[in-house]
Amino acid sequence: MATQSKIHERNDVNPTEGEHKYGDVDFADPTNKKYPIDTPEHVRAAWSYINQERNADKYEANEVAQIKDRIRKAAKKHGVTTEE
Image (cartoon, rainbow, N blue to C red; front, side, top):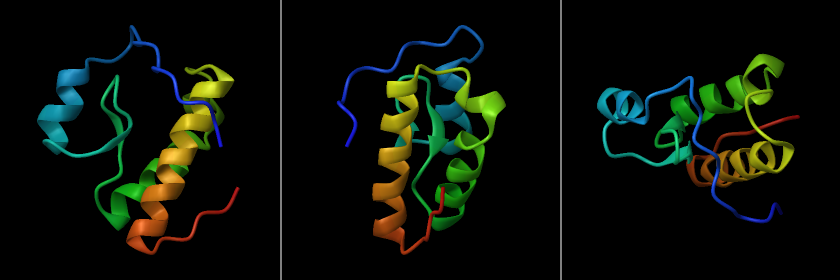
């Protein structure tokens, strides 16, 4: 399991946009309000997006590990299967 630390604020996103679009939900990246993980559909989408190099490259390796860990936990909760 990844060591939990605060994910850095990204300059290319506005956290209020994610909150406005999805509401008060859990996000795999709570700092930037990216990758909502509140429904099975959102969990599947979050897993797909974070596994795309162009998205993962915006984070440090330990941050990607934290995001994936949060998505895996949400997947288990929602009965969604994830594969690397």
